[in-house]
Structure formats: structure tokens, C-alpha cells
Length: 149
Image (tube, rainbow, N blue to C red; front, top):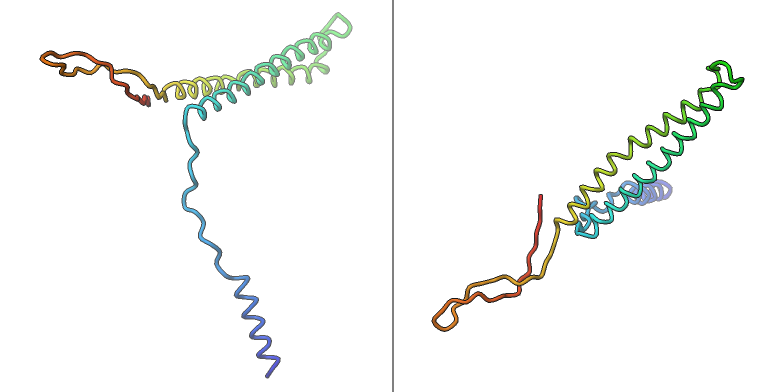
């Protein structure tokens, strides 16, 4: 009887700890603050990656052309098709890298335009005010927020 009771208690304790429900996860994650610095950072990262792709793609393309010219005519007479495979692969990889940089340049320019459109300015606005018996335009300090979609 004691063994059965001990077994039931141990089973209850183990199952309570292993099969219990954890804390409820958050339904929505906190969105990042998307201000001017956020979009400028994204634009810089996109442009940096795009320029790296253009540079490495150009290097692969030129390297593939040099390799093709060195291996295509080893004896100087005819075309040897067996040695041009790696050269063509280098040229294809270089061309693909150059072409894949175009969407990154476009995304970088869009992010830069978004950053420029989020402008907070402190400027004076001309406001008509009654001054004695006449209307006068006076500058009133104002804060403007410009958001373009």
C-alpha cells in the first residue's frame, strides 16, 4: 500500500512539472522604431552590399575572361573546349553577382527617399495677426512633420 501511494505521489509530481503549461507568449512583437536613422541605416547597408556584389562580380567576370583566354587557345591554334568550363562558370557567377546588385541599389534608394520624407522641421510660419487696427504677418515658431507615402 505504501509503495502504491509513493508511486502515485511521484507520478503526480513528475507529471505536474513536465506536462504543465508555460507562460503565454506575446501575441505581437514590438515593432522597431522606424525613424529617419532607421531608414538611412538600411539604405547604407543596401548600398554597401550592392557595391560589394558589383566589385566581386566584376572581379569574377574579368578573372573568367582572363582564364578563358588563357585556356581556350593553349597551343595558339585551335579552341580546346575541355579547359573552358571553370572560366565560363566564373563569368556566369560574376554576371549573376552584378545583376543581383541592381535590386539592392533600388531598395537603397527607396529607403533613402523614405528617410528624407520623414522630416521634422522647426521653422517660422507667417500668421496674420491683428495689431492695433491693422493686420500684420508675424512669424510664429512652429514644428512641422512631413510624411510621404
